[in-house]
Image 1 (cartoon, rainbow, N blue to C red):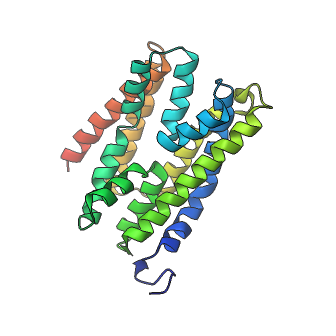
Image 2 (cartoon, helix red, strand yellow):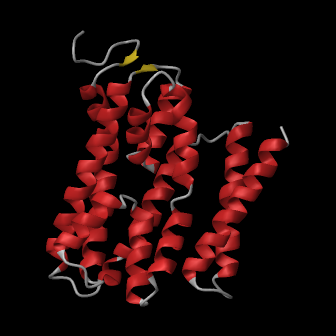
Length: 239
């Protein structure tokens, strides 16, 4: 079989790499921003690379930097990161039925490297009813994984020369990326399922805004995420 994208779908590792390319700039931008924030949070390059390789979650890594600066306990950091990354469990559960014939180890590797961006690409491919293989998914995930690690290290190098990341708006980079991904998934005339998604996003945004007046930002993020899950469950049942 040729190592090219076919009309029927995506079959090879190289196809996965190509599918990941539209999101690479996002990984580079956010990873670069995290590296700068990480250096200014008193992490060294090795610690930044290690965190990116093991934790591998943009939102949770930014949160960890804030918690480290606040001298939060290890237990508090672990629990917060667990809750922030809990959505990955749902994404993995959504993807797993499509790889039911693969081994447990392969399914674990897919779930471990699944990100919001790669899941968006995966979901779009499923929605378009295109064929895709395990090799395609591996190409998509591995490309994103390597890009993220390299970007955070490069950001860490540059971060040695930037003492205040907030003056460049780097602390807002992750929010901007998620907003961009969200907007690109919608058309001007929303379908029923898209209107439900909008209601979830609005509920999260409103609850987050209100909670910031009463609790810390990290607690507000966790509670607003739970509110979004609750609203999502309600609108899903009301078909």
